[in-house]
Amino acid sequence: MDAKVLATLPGLLRESQRVFDDTGGVHAAGLFRIDGGEPRLLCLREDVGRHNAVDKVVGWALREGLLPLTGTVLQVSGRASFELVQKASLAGIPILAAVSAPSSLAVELAEANGLTVAGFSRGTSFNIYAGDNRILRPEPAIPRT
Image (cartoon, rainbow, N blue to C red):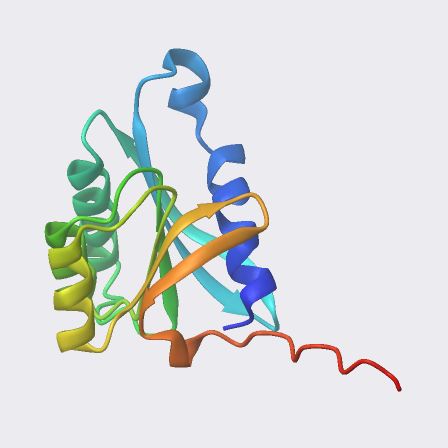
């Protein structure tokens, strides 16, 4: 996945958060697929609990017959906990991006299960904590001499 595309997901998630607009007090989980380099929101769910929001997304995918969710990215509005990494991994989601930090246990589980975890995914930047092999970064410019 292109790093520039991954960096756009928090903004796309936030733009689609209708309940947050009304309340200012819910978390969101959004499932994205990248089609031709462009992110497409497949499902967004909001809930007071970030774990519940993820459960709703995975439940939607189960009902739709989409599991395993290979080729998708799960963007969440809060922290990336051990449990969220577990849920993403079991659903077959290869990349989990969170607006806040992952826990150390989440990173360990992600590494053990081959999951990519990005944290502090805000604006135009993020940190990769596990599975950096899935993220395509631009080549650094070579200064002319």
